Each structure stands twice: as C-alpha cells, then as structure tokens.
Length: 516
Image (cartoon, rainbow, N blue to C red; front, side, top):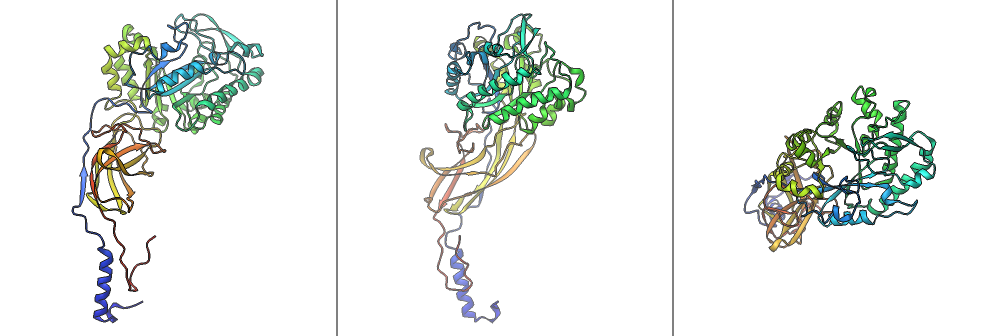
C-alpha cells in the first residue's frame, strides 16, 4: 500500500489533477431534481381485464334462431363503455357431427368485436340448459353423444320441460363424454390458446346446469363429498392441461346439497375450489343481487386479491329496470363493488343495449369511473433529474395509487419513452421490476425505476412519456391522467440530455480500471 504522506508534493498534485480530469469529463447538470404531479381525470376509463361486459351467444331466449347479426351489427355502436364480451356457446352448435367442428359463426362474432378492441370471457355449454322462467332452454349436448351410449338422467328443469343430463358417475361418462369433451377443447385451443389471445377467460364446465358447477334442479346424487370433489377436480385438470395462455375461471358458489356445506372449507373442497385456487383461477359469483350469500363473502374476502372476481347478475337488464324485484341497478352495482369485482355484467344484449345507454348511461359510467370496477392506477408524483449525460442512469421515483375496488390481474411493466418532435420515439425501456398486480385501493405505493440511457442518444430536449405495457412491450392500460396519446403513452414532463461522459487517459497507479 502506498502512503500519500510519503509522496512528494509535486507527485500528489499531478495525481489530484489526473483524478479530477476523469471525474469532470462532462458538465454538471444545470439543475437538480424535478417532481411532476400528473393531473388526474375522474371520468370513465375502460381497460382490459376490468369493467363491464355485454353478452352474445345463441341461447338468448329472444333469439329462437341464432344469427350472427343479432350479436354483432345489431348493436348501434361500438359499446365504448364495455371492455369485454361474454360469449355463451353450445357444444351442439359447434360439433353437430362427431369430429366435424364448425367455428364459422363463433369466429365471426369474435372477429367483429376484436376489431372493436374487446376481450372475451367464453363459456362452452357442454352439459345441459335447465331453461329459464318458462323457457324450455336449449340442448347443449350433441345428439350423437347420446347415440354413442352416454347415459343420462331425466329431470324437470326451471323452464318446466323435461331435460336430460349426463349420468356423471356412470362409466359411460368417462368412456364417451370425457374424451369427446377433450377433443372439443383441443379444437378450440388450437384456434385461440396463443400468446396475445383475445380470450381473457374460459370457464371450466362439464357438470351442472347452465354455466354453474351445480345441479340445482336435477339434484345429482353424489354418494359422498369426495365423489363430487374428484369429478369436478378431474374436469378442472382436463382444462388446466389443455390451456396454457387462456386463464381459467370457475363458479365459486355452492350446489343444491347445501346441507353438506357447513363451512367455507367444505365449499372449497366439495366444489374442488382447492384445485382452482392452486391454479390461479378467476372466480365467478352469479346471482347478483339476490343469489350470493352463505360462505360466498367469506371466500371472496380471502381470495379476491389473487383471484379476479367476476360478478354476474342472473337477470336481464330490463328485468332489473322494469320489474324491481331484484334490487335497483345501483344496488346491484354497490354489491358488485363490495365484492371487489374486476369484471361485471348484466344480460345486456343488442335488443336492450340502446335503452340501457339512453336511460342508464350514467350508471355504466359509474361502474368504470373513479371508485368503480377493476383497477384504476394513477401516478400521483414522478421525480427525475432535469438533465443527464447520455449513457447515464435515469432514476425515476414514483408514487402510485389504485383508485378502484379490484386489481390488475395480469402483469404489466412500467415503460419509459424519450420522444422527440411529434412524439417520435428516440429511446424506450421497460422496468421489469415494476409489478402492480398486488396494488389495492387505499394504499399508496412507492417505486423507483432505473433506466439505462444509451451513450449514442443525441444531446437535446426530450419529452418524457410513461406507459403500462404488456410483456411484449405494447402499452395496454389507460391511465387516469392527462397527457395521453393514441398509443396509451402519457407525457409527464421533459429532460435535457447532454453529451456522454468521456473517459480520460490516466497514467497514475490510482486510475480506476476499465469500465465494463
């Protein structure tokens, strides 16, 4: 080790100058830090993985003969307040003959709404339809399955008509039904289970009436809770093994045999929700406002932060509006918000949509406004240096809040842009440590992002823009602040870039080694 005290004063001066030359290769920033407080907006904001859904599908009781137009062009506009579409589709309409899948009408419906920037929540009705209030319902199971030997039980449905359901514990269910269902799901997966799929969620089905994992009217007699659990768990595993990009969801309520549900744990076990929870399923509760109860709220309070909640009203919009027997619209929405719902829908379809927008647009705006459904992520302050040399680190300290009752269920990263004239991108980078999925209402979140400016970045003034982008780097989230552009990038301030620091030569033993 060399002692500075032992060095000649002239040598010490030379060493000091050499080090100083290295430390002052670029001018100091002309100003220090700047803090920006974005201006928040309070109006409705529509985002993916959140908000209201409209409804399409052939089982609409007003459309005895399904046609694509009723579920696409019959809507008078692009449903701007709705971010997703509930698609109910019968197996018997896809595979009328064994092994021959007809996706033409299904694809037409999805293509129409994809062009209008909607996501999809899909339910394939693959067991039975108990009808509704005098309507006999449809027959979701293709006739050829019965002809192949699938055994069934007959019961009287809600609509009053005799219905058939598979005999779930008969050997023919495993021999005939399950392999055929697997092939149907494989056909769908080949079309839509891909990165960037527009299908946000797919419900696990294969047992029960309608879209519920429950036999409300037939009272299917499982001999033990374990027998019911094992059958439903098998169906869940079939879907889990088939789909790798589409998130799955399941009905989280009870079944007809409510006397067996003596605790929340019973509900989790009997309905095989242990499998659903272990695999990050979303959870749907149907029957808002008069159908939820029992252990439902307990389960919601336990799991909503990690499992997106879908709140489905059993009733048509006009039934709530005109009959008044299922609470008011606002009472329904209030309960949906108490359930931390990310997604919600009434049965709003093309024949009722126009009236809903004319008479109750403010109600739907409230659902996607401040304090509404899903998430609403707002940066409340952003701080960074006013000037930096190219090649340096740009540290941005942030404070965020979530204004709404749910959360952002899919990972999105903070992306920064430095843009020139007319918003032309000159630099961008994503902070992959930024993860807002756990952010809930009522908490402020602090995060510092560090970005790496390239040395070749030209000196000059740049606009600073931020976005919440998917893992492919595409901005997807509308923020409730001013300054957004058509690409969902938000101008939050400016920065001055100066020339990159220059490494000076050094002959002293005290010079640092080469930078990596």
